Length: 96
Image (cartoon, rainbow, N blue to C red; front, side, top):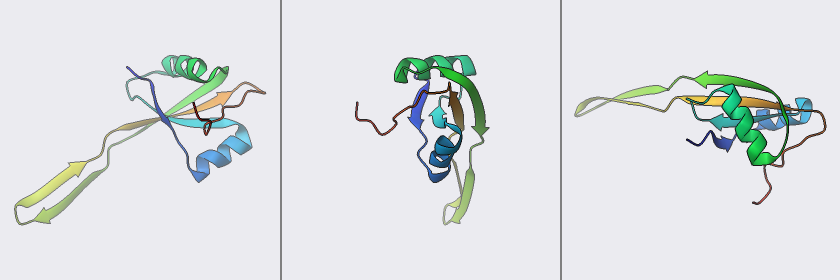
């Protein structure tokens, strides 16, 4: 099970990184805070001070067509906001 899916790169995430030193990641919805902390420390070589998680419900959309009502939905998402210890930074844009 891969815990970290991808980092969140948006204006708000970059602003929070500059302001508070927090980093946002999309993670596996079944993972817990301890698994997320270990995965970030192993992947980026930093010490994690705090982990906050948020679960986003799937978005449902529907439309009427000739064949009737078509319903679709997106997947459930879990986002983790990671706060590092003072002095540590993660270079998300680095080429591995």
